[in-house]
Amino acid sequence: MTIAHPFTNDYSRSAHPRILEDLASLGARAFDGYGCDGLTSRASELILEACAAPGGAVHLVHGGTQVNALYVDFAVRPWQSVVCVESGHIATHEAGAVEHLGHRLVTLPADEGRMDAAVLEDYLRGWRDSQLREHMTEPGLVYISQPTELGTLYSLEQLEALSSVCRSFGVGLYVDGARMGYGLASKANDVSLADLSRLTDAFTIGGTKCGMLFGEALVIPDAAHAGSMRTLIKAHGALLAKGWLLGVQFLTMFRDGLYTSITRTANERAARLSRAFADAGFDMLIASPTNQIFPVLPVGLARELIEEFGVYEWEPVGDSRLCVRVVVSWATTDEDEAALIAWIASHTLR
Image (cartoon, rainbow, N blue to C red; front, side):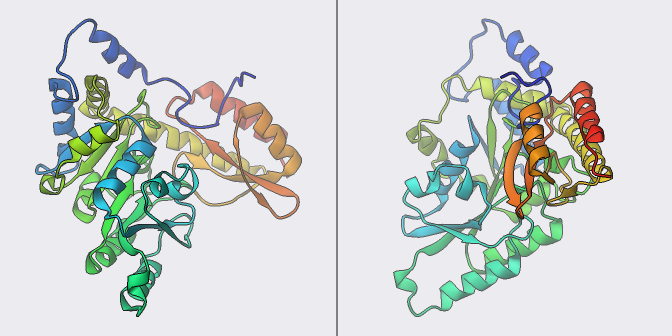
């Protein structure tokens, strides 16, 4: 069934028109393969400039699960585990990709989708001080996402606290930025790409959900720590022969601020929709400052909303209500927004 005004996700439409134009402009030109082309080199330069990491390394790959698995395989030794929150994407929506690599996932309770530095410190200290440590997997990497699965954000203070804990215990910190554009463009955000370069071992800048056809940029702030990443990417079947198709897209996004301008518009739409739900008497599961919002509706109304707008069923709330996830995309139109606001107004609880 075709949904006229979809709010299912932020990757169901092909790409921003400027991306498509720049791809089409390449025509029959020939490029060096495997990312060794001028477009990819210039895109990497712009990304590192934005990250204030002139000594860093950028690797472009096709997808989010792919890049997460790649970095875990690169950074985590065979006897080590990855620590994330219970709602972390690698723990809930990546089909066990990390476990398929032979690494245990250790999940900690989340605070509105975020990992709390004190909880992490308690876990790491418990492992370090345990007399049975040799019988346990060693924590090798901490995984978080920005924004989180609930659309919430880590503040700079929270990120600095996590970074401090990781470094004090000699554990790596990796940030999944599949929706990084929406985080950077949020009015509630105070974390920059430069902060991520300073506080983490690696992070990604997502394109697939932020206006590109496909593509994720893995940023390793210190290239001396990048090792043989390209060889590992090849071993994972992720070194794209036509690498310039990734390069040109990131070049378009980072050349003049398109990456954050289109995601900022999506956040603004989401904020208006969130207010409309609240004004109509609906609760929100959580206050999200990015493009994902989580209204709670009576089950019957939730089913109607799912049917008409393709929103995602998130979780039951009590016996008679259901939380749904409404995702505003970089491609959501004025007409899409107006249609959903009209639906909300016609189903008000007030």
